[in-house]
Length: 321
Image (tube, rainbow, N blue to C red):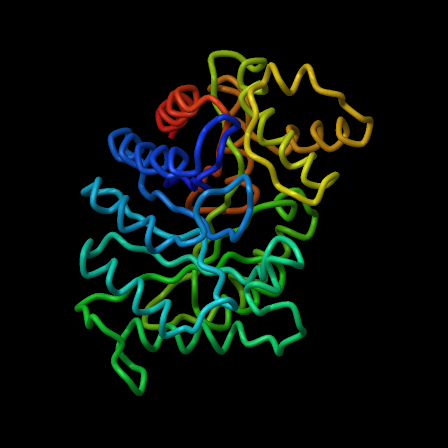
């Protein structure tokens, strides 16, 4: 089982966006020292709780501070970009950090209507995701009608951040998938993964491959781990109430805030989806998930207000696998 981290550059109450980006780079350095396989960053636009909307720029900074760990996007939202531009960005990264770059690709159009308008995606467009993936792959592997620059000797691996239809697209194109979110708890997950593997059409020798992504936090005891998971669960619940995804808050401030019944239910549901606990509890949770899904890799998308506690959790998690 390979083990990787996804960092969303979460902002924190009382800190600047620049500090959030610095923390992401520092976490990547720690992840490499701890022996993680990959370190991925995400693309979110104009979200108060997330500092970075440009994975390629942030990955350039991370690549310059690390030397071994694979770096990648989890992911670039392809409907928001021209495939050639994405190819050029990641070919630059690959030229600077050869053999270390992964390109995860999703299809989200933006968090709120104003953001979608700013991205020029506030109207109904034809779904070109599959065609765009094919075009992008052509630029990356040098088979397109034009040569994307810089030309490199190796290809940048592509991964599809997949739900139901995304799994079907990935199978047809012979691409690996990253599966996360509510689908992990759905009874449809195993049949969907079975269909993905059954229908997989290899491309240039590729094989089906599944990565599962979920929040994971490890501490010396279960109660402490749940406290670490609380800031993210609280932010998710608050976003459903206010329509705005907020910065992470300290646990003491969350505990002293009003907890409407609906918010409490959402917080509890989010905590249940998180693999949070002492090492043996988290290990059993991940082993059960790996057995159910047949996944080859876990991508831990953890975050919490206390940055030192997050680094400690990362180290404890790395020791488990």
